[in-house]
Amino acid sequence: MNLLHYLKYFLFHLIGLLALTALLAGGSWISAGFAFIVTLYIAGDALSGDDTSTPKLTWGGLLTFQLWLALPLLAAVVFASVWSVCEADLLGVGAWLGTLTGYDLLAARAATAPVHHVSGVLLTGLMIGLIGTITGHELTHRTWDPVSLLVGRWLLAFSFDTVFSIEHVYGHHRYVSTEQDPATAPRGRNVYWHILVSTVRGNLSAWEIEARRLQRQGHSVWSPYNAVIRGHLMSVMLVALAWLAGGPLVAGYFVLCGLWGKALLEIVNYMEHYGIVRDPATPVQPRHSWNTNRRLSSWTMFNLTRHSHHHAQGEVPYQDLKPYPDAPMMVGGYLTTIVVAMIPPLWHRLMTPKVLAWDRQYASADERLLAARANRASGMAAFQQHGTGSERAGY
Image (tube, rainbow, N blue to C red; front, top):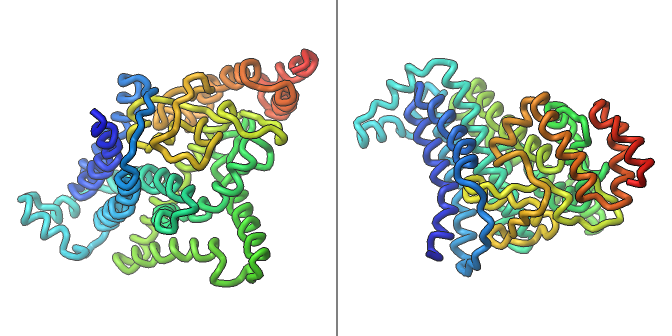
């Protein structure tokens, strides 16, 4: 039985292999693969319920190896996606697999309609977010492990977001749910505006954090010691490889995939902390993040879903995160919540009552004052009618 708790995390890799197969099969298989994975998550989370178990797992090496496997898996998925829009048969992969399987990959690729290439961007970006960002997030928290840091930063390079390893660990975790945090969306903000604002402010924050580190160590900000510059060069290298594979159009296709993967990260930031406020003098607690224990999301996302515990103790490895069933809860599993967030009227209809309930059930007295101010500044009548009332009530 204990072995099953290790095997369940390999479902993550199975999702990646499904995407890889769809991209190589070409044509409508690409669109079908994307639709299947999205449906699997939404239906799977809805039907499988919550996982609130925290088994004691002792094979730390295997658990870390599962994370490291994400890099070759993501590289294979992105290669297959780039291959799907190339004219050349890169490395002879299509011919080799065709001989091996009896399926004519090259003919299927040639017959792929543009709409399925759009699905290719969506599917590849989803995998960059799932395989790249989620695992990169876990690995770059392991600041004591240089191998994990390196693997994590390469995973983040696919979404042009190696600065995440700086801003998230040293900025976001310090300032979460305050106005100083670029990734925390205030009440009333539109998710699409948040993607832009959080990206720009996050990059600026990472630069400032890195500049202070270099100054303490006596290095120039314009030097090879600058992890921000090195990280962006990693992403440039990936774009250059895509260009070499098929020219500017293929490189542009890869850029679109990476930007979609980056956008997904910011959507996740949006839904993990939307509307929550924190007194900066108060330590980060489980109540300062939206949480979910949906089973499929938890098993295939290395417990990123247990975000309340992660922010309370950022150094805790994924297998030891606790479910905190009494923490504030998202509207559903991760992909379900992403879809809801991308439909602003639906998002605000579902989340405004949850945010106001957070004020009543979780906020401290000082945070209720901050919440009242946030309500007034939200630009939304549903929040504003609670602003002055909350303040008068001593909230």
